[in-house]
Image (cartoon, rainbow, N blue to C red):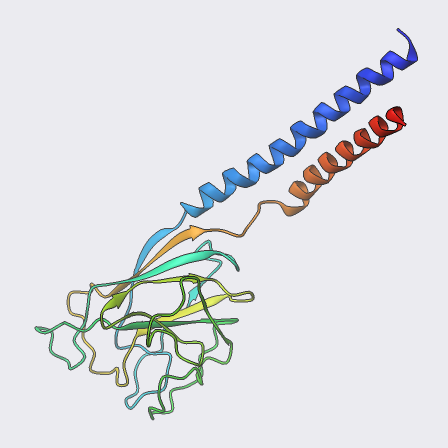
Length: 229
């Protein structure tokens, strides 16, 4: 076999390998995205007497959820939804209230409650980060200080993109006085569901696969061009 034919066969094999590599890489990315988007669908109880804002009465601190522990990453899109209700006046026979809000944070720090209500602010959450509501904010849903409502009045549910650098999310009952909030049947909860993910597994490996495919395809293009010239 002549050297020319050998080079031709090697060249064709190299091109086929590059195309197969690129297809494999993109298939892995797509498969991962589909699997990850379906990975998280969970519901967590929320103590309506706990708070991450300062209020008239001292109450337990809200415990933040770790974004990493939930299997969520920066850039992922999630849906938050409120379940159940509570009594805002200490009457367990009249649990009708269901307002819920949240804020993302770069860390899990929560400063002490001052015992005074100065509005819904993130003064106690020094790492608070502005949320990105992908469908826009409904009237009165987004405040000017990184807090957004998950449910309020006639709406329930918020589709949010996890901000860059967000590591935790504080979620609590939306109120100004928390000590008298009662949820006797323990049904006040938040649902967290993945909608899409911005993550790609093993970035070094995937980048290597794609780079090899691009390099090999480009090299073959140059070779074919030289033949024409």
